[in-house]
Image 1 (tube, rainbow, N blue to C red):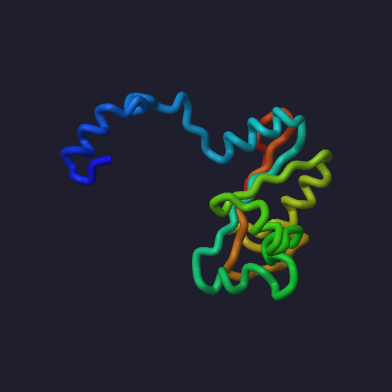
Image 2: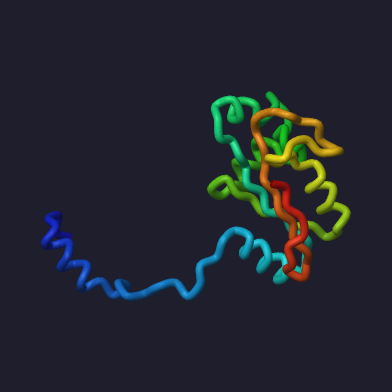
Amino acid sequence: MPHNSEGFEAHRDSNPFAGLKPAERLDPTDVLQALCKLKGKYGILLHLRQHSPEAKTDFVAPGGPVRPAPYLTADDILAGQFDDLMWGFFDSEEDLDACYGATVGPDGPTDSNPYDGPASVYAVTCGPDGELRNENT
């Protein structure tokens, strides 16, 4: 492929994909809804927020769980994270609610998780019908 701008323009004109546009743009919440409906399961979308050096340091307890989401470990995050996002699926609404209730989001500690540090995990839940339910903001 030529390295000058003129050659690049010529190559761009011959690109067979040049006119293609995606049929629909999906955000992570759309993906959650589609997967819950497809699987017939309850689901949660997690966005791991570590915006400051303090949050990054405080996010995972040494040798322990993720402080704002104690059902996760550092290994879970490394294995399942995509661009700071994770999706989880549950057979029961009770299990989903327990997970959501333990998730400390930007709004601070929950009844089942007193963590009050600089890190947070945004969470939104969805039912097996594909309808969104709860969101911690």
